[in-house]
Length: 90
Length: 299
Image (cartoon, rainbow over all chains, first blue to last red):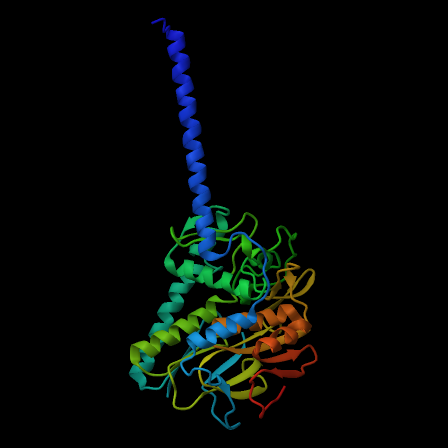
């Protein structure tokens, strides 16, 4: 074997470089996957601007959250009723 | 009905229950505890809140508690459903216009340069690892949703804990939970104690947003707290006050805030969606949309 100290040093350096590159590539792929997953979970952090879907939001919430189904949430009461709460800007 | 009323977050807080004093005291405790938790999580006026830490170290992803994660996610949901009209990344614009402390101590300064444009789509929420990150140059402000979320959540917790209907009001954001024998009577007005009208709230939430309150002077003129994300300046739309009913107070307050940004186009957006609202324009005229009660209307 004519494996001189210089050749051994070069081989070691080459293997180290390959290891660093492979580790960096794997790390980048993992970060990309994690970021993509996080975005997919929330629908935020990228993507198109979309359009306002006030309708869909209201409809969805009405069907899920209302304890009274489709009954009106706001109704008329006698004008002399004593207020129990107040909705005003503050 | 028993009511407990106090002041916090620079506004009036009210818990009303269909029960006696002990239930009302317990209900008030639930509201107080939740408000304290939310304050620690996302207050913009506390240097030690998790939200301020996220803002200060942007663009780093920061581990946060589930409550903070939830509140940021709710704010982004509001932005998504309003096409960005209610954008939680306007925080840095509020600061540069001078709203960087409790409203009672704000005013008089210069308006700082614009900087980055608000963009809620660049906020990262990592549900798996419980982290939040905001782009460099932007700051989160959850003012349009956190108070309403607190009212919703507190009302639900009270109703579940005491098995009775509950009404929670935080600074005019009203949330009802449970099924009351009679609708809750709620006074709707531009400002607390001002002229308005009374309506019955059977369920859901009722919220009012206005450009007539939380105002201050700057070297560039008058300012208020509702920022138009498109301009980075206080909204100048044709609607000065909007009250919205929705299945939750978060949705109601999101839409009432969006109305101030959308201005003259609000009705065209709300009517096809069947949104129930009371809109007051710059002249003081009230317009009613959706299922708003037909009688007893007043500007």
